[in-house]
Length: 149
Image (tube, rainbow, N blue to C red; front, side, top):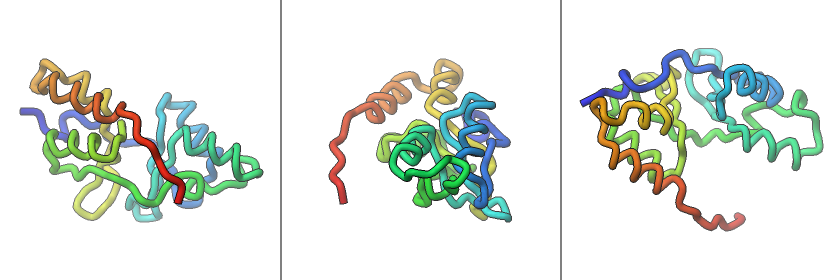
């Protein structure tokens, strides 16, 4: 069976805690990615911002993207995989939280990479069960009604 370390993308592009939403958007554009993890000065994961987060911040905050901290556009409540997690637990996290991309952290919470549903799909048939990946996609794609707080 494949390990998470064999599937994930190492060296994820990340923003620092001081970077703007504009910087995050530029990283997404330059590297054709849909989210950027946010790390502190020691490399510990402290947040994540998606392309949707940036669009919503641009629409609702009435400020330019270079005036909005990436951490304020995104979320500080990050769901992350640990580098020693097995693939089943990664799929379970994706299903439970309906997310397609997970930052991967080491035992100290430092960002070491990213794993996406695409990474899982590319490995089906080569040590990864296609039905598990399909089930994960179905769970992620299921519409849920969100209630405003």
